[in-house]
Image (cartoon, rainbow, N blue to C red; front, top):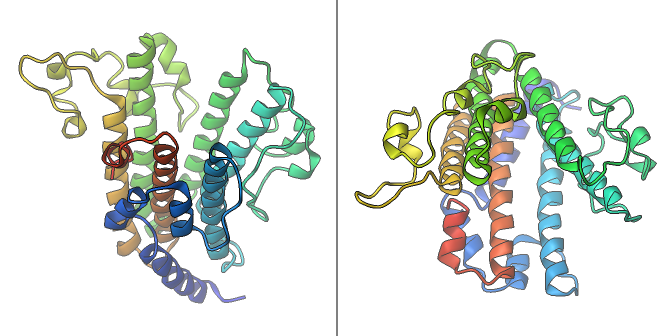
Amino acid sequence: MMDRSAAAAYVYAKASGMLAKSYVGPRAARLFEANSLHELWALLCTQDAPVLPEALFAQALEQEAEKQFASDYITLLKAYSKPGGVLVSLLRSFDYDNLKDMGATLCAGAENRPALVDIRPYSQLNYDAWPNLATITKDSPAAWYNTVPQPGNQHGLDEKLDKQYTRDLWDSVLSLKGAEREALYELIRQHLSAENMLWVIRLKVYFAMPREEIIPRLAYGTDTDKGSDPLAGEAFGILDLPVDSYDAWAKWKYAGLLNPSEEGVPWTIDPRWLYQAFRRRIQHMARQRFHQHPFTDAALASWFLIKQFELDCIRTAVEGLRLNVDKKLARETAGV
């Protein structure tokens, strides 16, 4: 096992090489040039394509992309005898997604375990205990998720899992010291804050949900649901803004990310447009951090966010091909 400084140099060199071959930045557009799912598979995967119906093939392609992302990241983590807590917390987003998938499967009455992303040895869940949720989650931060969800509360439990992951990740950022904390604090804060703001806007636009119902649905970095919270504070600032008034949003800190307003044409804030704009913004920040802080945990955490964006683009490209969506529209939907 290498000492930490040697491991950091190795990881940065390896991660840089992986990014150079990734479909991010200008290369992301290549994902949307494929004319079929099989062509996209050939672009992304080294093994032979499985023989499956189109819907199952699309699912298999997305699962393969997820597994490759996790596998590459784990390869980098294993260079350290003890990887930083924030690096492991980022990877455990797969644990939370796996748990939501298992809960949904059991809720539907199915017996076969769903396809999961294996993040051993960094997982906090005992997947071998399937289908016993209590044993699967025992001694993990999600130990409270110990019974099969019912159709009426499954979405609520998923929301609670999202909050748990956000808090776990944020606590790991707060545990950083010195230059590492300075390099990562604002990147992760803005990433999580954007998720809260987008959640507010979706709830307002799609469900006309009032502020008193939105506030408890936000993810917080502290134990109080107040506007001073580092992760939810910016979301509090838009709770009362009308979704159909551009003038009301014009002085917003992120007004430059809004969908345009045309004189004489009714305007409503577009959650999809804003989602794309925030993703591009966070991507730009992550790429800056990666190059500005080599040989640090900040570089590898930034790498994770960059590759997470790539995975989202792959999913959008897959769905675009499966549904025969215009290539230009699919690319724009991905924010590329």
